[in-house]
Length: 393
Ligand SMILES: C[S@@+](CC[C@H](N)C(=O)[O-])C[C@H]1O[C@@H](n2cnc3c(N)ncnc32)[C@H](O)[C@@H]1O
Image (cartoon, rainbow, N blue to C red; front, top):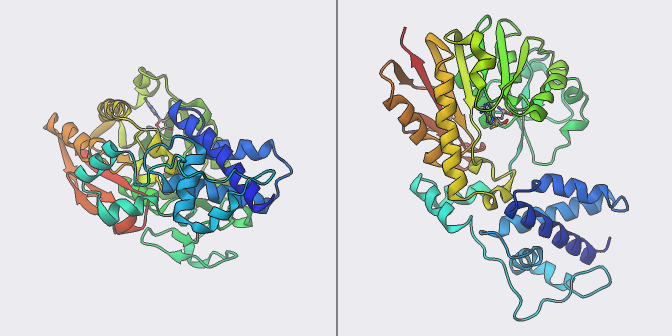
């Protein structure tokens, strides 16, 4: 592909991504993968270049752009080396007209910028939400140790005991250590959230919103494969990815439980009042993960945010019924909005005299309400809110 054709391909992809965001269709990553699956002629350099253009253009726009072209023209305003590529060549984009629509720059739609600022995320803290994330690995202590693991590149040891950091784009998935389950890809913040669970061998731990099990695998390692570890979720597709991952990681202790939305407790009845720890890694807006999913800013509106908060309250109430006296509940969201973090745990604790908030004592982060918050600017992690509460004996 010529450089101009790459710009045109990025414009077409951005059109699909904008439509996907507005109609709540497939996420950008999937659209990019599908696009190239249908265009086998594009080589790996072309793919990398187009992908890079797409994500730079997404980051360059604040609110949802009017079109893929408007987004790319915005990027060309910021990177003049792109301007000559709007040359009207056979596969390239037409020249930029004087009256052409240009997407607005910025962090996000205005209402979201205001909500973040009201949650203490503004200035450099806000700008860092759109940085490129490094690649973090968790050494799987069921199979290896950080100190004597031999990897193709040396990683930077981080504060979480099993975390190593590599530059963005490192092809870890090609490494034998990855294929053999010695390491997992997991953001440092996510690893710290797992530390806050304090899972120990022999305990009964429920990962209520386990998804594909990123955190479940870390809990299995912390428990040394001993005890009871339940991974539940309402999404069959996500949960079904856990079994092969667990097999690769040697995490034989995990029991997957598919939940019926609205009737979650039915499938978990036998654990009522029995769990030592319940992790609620709740569905949320993902404002803390824009470094990886910058187009998520375009998918959120106040109605959806309010729905997330309702679900989070419901899941907290549900999780509380599973915890044994003296046991703990850990609430996590990858959001930096108080509406999904500090406000939720404050409501939970306000309603309950038999629960008290704990200090999660993590090596990074800052106190926010009754929890701890990690941010890209301060902690170099994805954004997370993490809180822990203990039920009186
Ligand atoms: C933030 S994601 C979990 C990510 C996962 N823990 C990980 O570390 O990879 C939130 C999950 O909550 C699940 N979920 C949504 N509603 C739920 C419900 N009512 N009960 C349990 N899980 C639910 C979603 O399907 C999604 O997988």
